[in-house]
Image: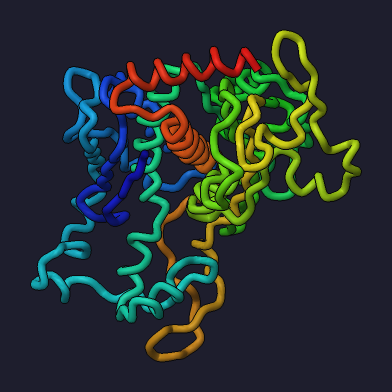
Length: 389
């Protein structure tokens, strides 16, 4: 039902996005999208770019008087830093001589494989698009998905659980929807999206150490969705499994290197009697644990969908790593581009957007229609039918 495309380079004129498949009649607030964009820009350890950009979306098409039309939605976010890069990133051939080529790839980045894949002569052709600046548009697109889900009381949240070697041990299998939402709400007032004051300072101290040493640091976050009905996704085909789709989406976020559903890796250390979520009945089916993270057999089971994701350290370092000049083949230090020291809090907000998109996609796949009214009718009909089971 849903698909989207993004376009744009990190220091180009703008980042653009097109959403196709959003039904008519969904309330869309520009202010809500801008709020999500602001959340993405916050977080202790962000780089100088955040002092330049103040992201704001422009809705080009697909929305009239605050409601979707059913036609493609086009979104536009200006890059304020474009004025400093107009010659370097100009689309006209006459500007080619105005910029020195980047020739020293950064380990851990798309620089070298991208150069080899497209046979470029300037790594800037790779790094401008592979940059996490692209996620500004994905957050805007996810904000649209969130506004669809809000009609059905489906909520998305996140919080950080690990920065570098400092980790908050938390067992999500026994957290209620309310507790998950409370953690996410508390994270909103934290500089590092950490709900626990006692560990927030340890996270910040870890980032401060990376700043002082010219290094960077990664970490982990939890992103979740509450209020989902059972039956989103499918066990019938591999590419319709909800967990597979979500895992792909989260892994597509720049610098994410691991994704876990529910208890994830820990499940491999447990007996089956410890790992499964037993089923009970009182007017309807329910569980008292959520080791599976709300997904069984590729489908939502009615419990909160809970994802853990791990972000590697940013590969751009002020104290550069060893590299090789791709043209002279001489040993050199990797190029330095202005960058974050830690972007885990921002990644958690991006994770929310990605999760919202895939939940919305699965929701429309199950209850789809051309208008919000039709979808609402299908959803209410389904709820009545399963109560009879």
